[in-house]
Amino acid sequence: MEEVLDVYTRPYDSDYPVVCLDETSKQLIKETRLPLPIKPGHPQYYDYEYERNGVCNLFMLSEPLAGWRHVEVTDRRRKKDYAQILKYLVDERYPHAQRITVVQDNLNTHVKSAVYEAFEPEEAKRILDRLDFHYTPKHGSWLNIAEIELSVLSGQCLDQRIADQEKLKLAVDAWEAERNRVGSKINWRFTTKDARIKLKRLYPSIGFQ
Image (tube, rainbow, N blue to C red; front, side, top):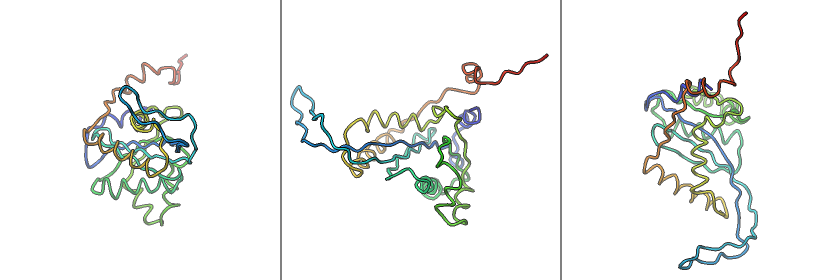
């Protein structure tokens, strides 16, 4: 925990960006009946019946100090999808960075071997040599700022019926573009000092005789 909190105290440095990574899923919902249109004094009405149309995965990348985030919609949450996200960070988002710090949880797909499964050894090593991983502790995913961004995404974009993956991508892209345009940032204030006071019960007790 303290390792992640120390990462969040680093000053902004474009050569050494700190990026938080997390993911969630979205159930796709198709309407079985056309919604009633909006009228003066009345919102749009949807029928309670709907048709399930599969599930999509959403990767959230967030650079808190830069006020930047990116959401990648994928069919599934596989190791090779995770590996492609890391390649995107290295080659497209931060091609000139010296080293990229990635904060993430301990999901079973968040492993270096995933990159070797997706790419040839030389390519996998090239990608991993540019990355520095820091993991949130078990039951401590709230320490991942990307989880906060996912909560914002859920409340502002995903809280509606979306029929298919293409419509989901359009909705997410619009949300991402607007939030990046205004440079929305998350002001993280929880520090190691706070943790040692408020989460004292989680620290081991050392007794002296």
